[in-house]
Length: 136
Image 1 (cartoon, helix red, strand yellow):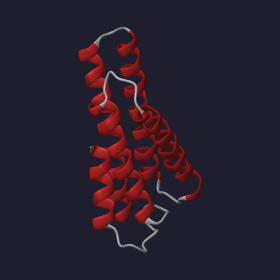
Image 2: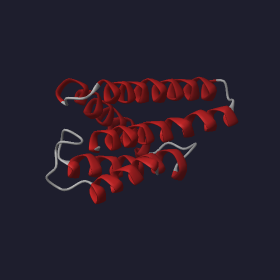
Image 3: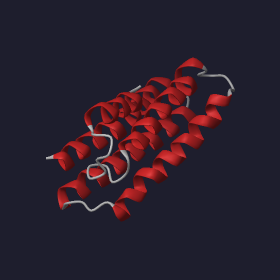
């Protein structure tokens, strides 16, 4: 859900041909985030606890998303503050992801839901803050 909201914000708020904010065409960033949100919903809500094609799509899409955004560290010029926000967003999100995975393996479902929800909130929210910093 939060990935799709961030993707919609990109499509609505950033001019179609403005590559200065995200370093890539906003339509690509927006659409892959919307797709990620839909696939995540399919995996984490619609088919939670069951085998489904959504599980494969979610992992593949997440890997592509991760690579897409990490690559920006190397070709998008950023200020020190932008680097800090971008990198901390990634680190904190990954910590939440791993804590959630550990909780799931220990069958601590409430803890898993908290960490997994924070994982889904942290990445889009942190990238939103980063994009806003770049816009001003």
